[in-house]
Image (cartoon, rainbow, N blue to C red; front, side, top):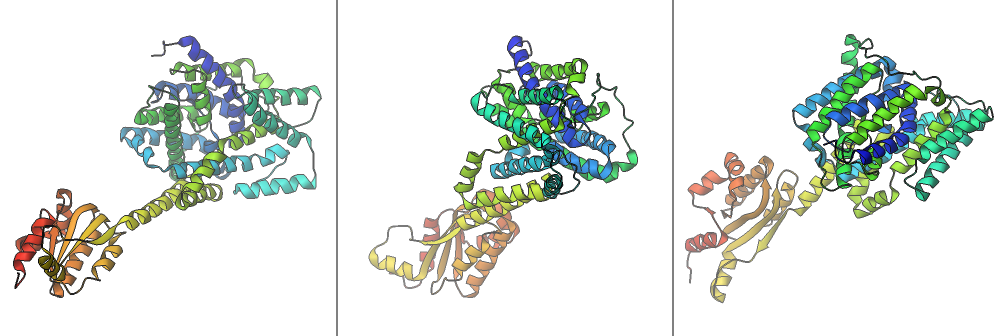
Length: 529
């Protein structure tokens, strides 16, 4: 497979490597483990995820979303804990791949995904404010962190770092509009580095990088800390699965004839996250932006992603002394510009205008991402989306009185109307809609027979069957004979289990259609004419 169009795929890999270099360095620094950790992650995880993953086009490495999760782990448990968490998350991803969990990502609503993405972008931006201003700040909440950084800067302003950061941001955003195919992030970082070195401007830089990838080691692994870090590992694994499968879906949508294997993708990400920490790398996942660059650059096979990682490895070998002079403020500018570009205002506005429920889900998920954590945000978004969806479904349920079927003369029709009524149940008969059903039948009065037409019922759960039984018993207590028509085969099990069908069947009150039910009711009417 990788022999197809090797030249085009190698060129695509080189293009992605140019884009990925400043991002790998920036996310490594932002994670708290240093630029080398980000570069190692891009190399090791990039190769392994490409080899073993389920997408031919996916590019993996350190990402902003993963950095958001890693930062609190470093603050709370130290750098070694991040490596342990990454390894544990990899094992969890392998387990998810074996149980076939990859297919479930398609059930996540687009509003949750867009709100989640917007929240991540806000967190990344806020996290980079201290580095962009060239100040130190420590706080668990990113909004507090940014506020503290601004206050510290205003108390003793020094303008070199913010000017560098703003210059990088402007170059990246303006360049993306002018020539989207050019690697303006790398050009901006190179320019900022040249300016600081050439004019001797004193700013904090990345510092020395190792000239080679470290030898694999498990010395960081602390078995006794695993119970403490299990929750963080689950969060990292969940985020890696979510982001990787969404990225693969995006890649599929940008091409024709390419379809990823979700479970194999989880397997590949699992292998990458098990191995990368052994070399000092942080937790990795697929990167949507780099994957999109890969596709747009003409990639068709895994060779592109593999070559991107190999080129980054060569950078460590050949250009480590040059990379060491990159200002941290310039990398902060890269990440801030990346965060801004993550948010598609037009798409958010379109979703927000579609329905009020979609807007509520999206905004709630975004706020929870900033205020809480990523996994909690997704769960909150799913809960709100599910509750609103249940409400919409419950409102679709109806109980309507309908005309009696059959051919009758005017006199007989009037007689039947005085004694027989038919109601059509439409939609789901389940726990969230039972109150609408009950309120409709409570109004039935002054008739001998009630026919409940069940052919349009879409689903029945135990709550719905129980309410139906209670409603029938209430009508019968008032001397009204209840008949059912058009009960679907798939609903008979639950209706039978809750005692709705057995007694009515024995009394010959369950019919295949309404016509037969009316005929039976007519036969029971006294003084028919």
